[in-house]
Image (cartoon, rainbow, N blue to C red):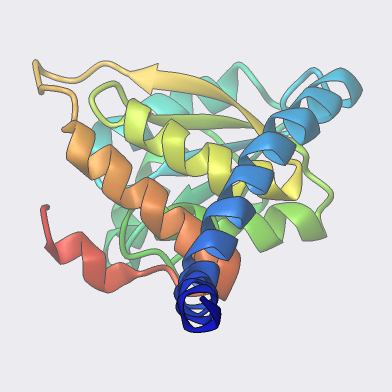
Length: 198
C-alpha cells in the first residue's frame, strides 16, 4: 500500500512543472483583461502610433494617418534596410522627423512587440494605435494582447486594406501566442518556432 501511494506521489511531482506552467498561464490570462480594462478607463484615447513593418502600404497609410493625428508620435518597427524607404513616406507627408521613432530590433511580428514594449513603458505610453494590414491584424492583436497587455498597455487596432490577401492561418496565430507566452516567462521570443510554418 505504501509503495503504491509513493509511486502516485512521484508521478504527481513529475507533473508539477507542467501544472505550474498551466496554472501560471491561467493566472496571466485572467490578470491581463483586468489590467486592460483599468488602463482603458484611465487612458481612453491613444497616446502614440505603432506601425508594423513588412509592407509599404502600411507606411503610406500611417503617414496619412499621422497627418490627422498631429499630437501623436510614431513608432516604426521594421528592418533597417527599409529605413530610407520608410523615412521617405513620412518626409513626403510633412511629418517632422522628431515625431518618428524607428525600431530595428524586430525580426518578425512577435518581436515587433517585445522590442517596442520597453520604449512604451519608459515613455509612459499606455494606449497606442496599432497599424497593420487587414490580413495580418488578427495575429498582431493576439500577440499584442499578451505582450503589451501583460504590461498594462492597451491598443486600438487600425487595419490597412490589402489586395485580396487571405487572413493568416489559425496555426500561425496560435504559434505566435505560444511564443508571446514564452517571452512572458523567459524573456526569450522563441524565434526558432517561427520556422515551423511561415
